[in-house]
Image 1 (cartoon, rainbow, N blue to C red):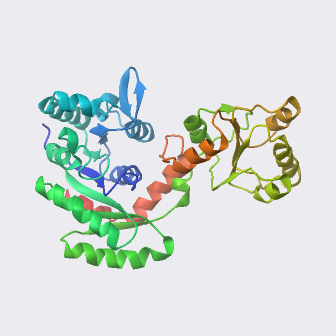
Image 2: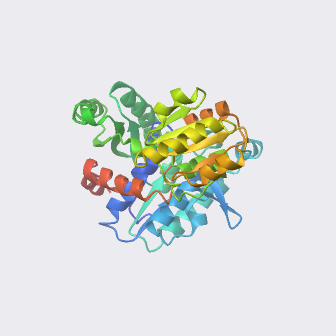
Image 3: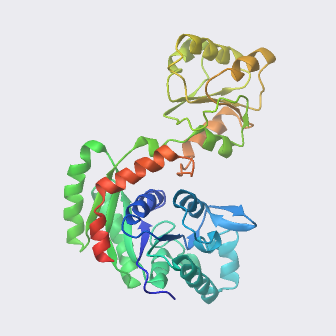
Length: 364
């Protein structure tokens, strides 16, 4: 397997700590030094089907954002389908999987100056089929960067758990990036986390301030996740949701929630609320909401539909009831998507300003 191309493996202390965010920012930063960059997510758990191949969502994202000129199937060699683990435990094919990862990496690294490898959770994820993140990093001969969430005690405790498994596999850790730290505590957290990590022989590479926009879903994402129907064509599917309100109150009480960035969830037969929204828009055009989800598959009458078609934000119709919709929105994992240009630009700036890329380059 290729052993000459510089590479780094991005791991985390848990899922949704910011591996993909870090990967986007680091690829952008590394591109300033290594013009020809590659990307691979050896083991993926969230995938889409492209040309009858199961490709991890993050691989698709990186390819579209950076135009990597790598075969998509090699950027995502192993997709963990629902019955993947069961089939492996029935008939282990470890050597086949290892060779598949190695060959995919060779093709991704072909004529590249640098390859970023993204893991799929903490160091132990994948252990059940003998391909933990720590083991995969060892297979790829990659040094590791661990991403953790903000705080002092808990992140360091979790980093140490991951450190133990990486060290057991003989994998070198370059350092730690502390993500999603409250802006007014960046310096304070950075100082103490640096002290705590130093006692464990680890280095702090950067502290990234929390940006609410990165965890705010767009209406387009909600439309997909809820399998909802569009009732109008506002052209504003990239609207970001800052707050969620369930319209289960009287109209006079609902009025105060019709604010910028609010997602209103209400049954489709609450025509009084929808007409109140339309009336409010006439008087306060600049304070447009993020959007509305009508629930219960209850389609409004003709006159209300006519008003909905004129609204300047998306109005969706979902089959689920209000409780189910609100629960799904609350539990939604917000992933950066190729069309999220504002988020991607922000991520590039965040990593460039808050992570010591030179330390990473020197370690490579």
